[in-house]
Image (cartoon, rainbow, N blue to C red; front, side, top):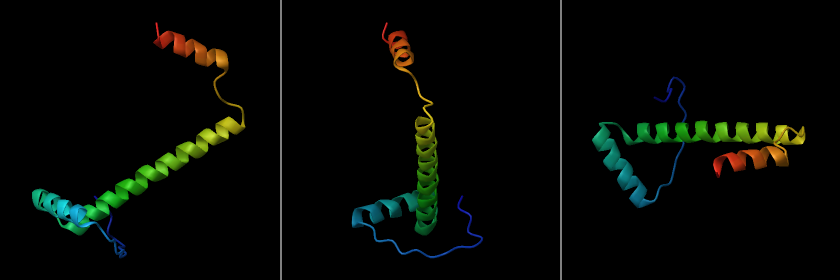
Length: 82
């Protein structure tokens, strides 16, 4: 559920078919369209922020040289292709 303790407004332009599908989902879930849209945006932001954090972490590891060697990769590949 989206925290609406301190809400703010955002206007979003949707394709007609997306709006229609959102309306259908809202009816099926007995929920308001704006609530579903807010939940979807919150989930997207959470997932995107997680991805960015993981990418930054991996880049840091690569910059430190903390990655698998050629022999490590070959060993894993051999293990899974037998």
